[in-house]
Image (cartoon, rainbow, N blue to C red; front, side):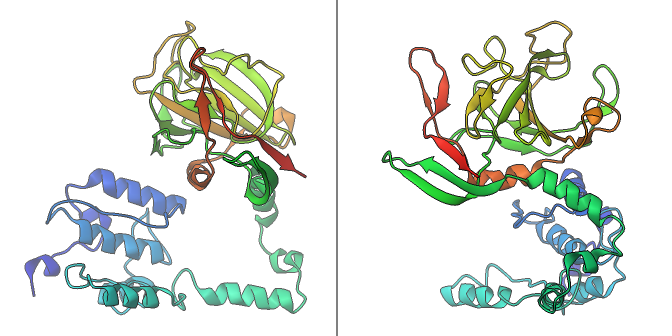
Length: 358
C-alpha cells in the first residue's frame, strides 16, 4: 500500500497546511449550508483528495462534531471502508472517456437509501399526506416547527410569483418564477465574502449581521425586492446606506458602504417606492467614521443585510432578527437586472421594465 494512502488523515484536525480551507468547510457543515458542488484545485500533494474525502464524510455524517465527521456512525464507517453507496470516488486520469462519463451519470441518478439524507424519508412524508394526514398533525410534536415556519415564510414570502418582464425585443412576457433580483447588476463581477456572525470591533464589539459582496467602486447596486425607501443617509458604521422596507412590512433590506460623493441613484429619496431590479445606488467603501463621506473601509464591497420585522418594537432593539444571506444571494444569481449607462450623467438605470402580478 502506498504511504500516502496508509497515512492519509481521516479528520479535518489532522490536515496540515490548509487551515483556511478546512475552517471554511467546517463552518459550512456547522451552519448546514452545503453547496451543490465543490472544486478543489492545486498541485500534487496539497491535500485535494484528502480534504474532499473528509468533507464527503462530514456532509453525510449523522452526528458531526464541530464540523468534522464523528468517525463512529454507520455512514462514516461505510465511507471510510469505501462501501458507501452515497459516495463515489473515481480516478480522473482513468475515467476520461465518453463512456466513463455516461456511467458516472447513471450512478449518480440513484437516490440515497441510507445515511443522513434518505429518499425514503421524503417518500414516507408524501405517503402520509396522501393518506389524509395534515401538516398540523405531522408536526404537532415538533417544538419549534411554528417558529421556523413563520421565519421561513417571512423570509421567502413574495420571492416567487407571477410577473411581467420586458424582453430584449421590446415585447412583454408573463411568467412565473423568482421575482427578486441579485443585488449586483448583470455583467458586473463580484465575489462572496461569507462571514455572517464574525466579530466587528469598530465603535464596539458586535457580530457582523450581513453578507458582503466584494466588487469595484461604482458597480450598480440593485433593489432585491420591491419596497419603500425607509432611510437614506450617513451611518458611522455603514457609511452611506439605504434601508428599504418590503411592501408587506415584514422585511427590511439594508445596503451599506455605498460610493463616496454619489452613493445613490439619481433623485432617490426617502419615501420613494422602488421596484425589484431598480438601480438604487453604487458600491463603495464608505463608513467606519463619525465624519460623513469618508472612505473608512479598506476594500470596496456591498454590505447587504436582511432583518425580519414581526413587530415594530423589534426594530433597532436587542430582539432584532437578521438573516444569514449567503444561500439566498447565491440563489438570486439566476435573476440579475440588466442596466444601461447614461453617457451624459454617468448614471445607470435598469434596461428592461418589470412588474409583479398579484
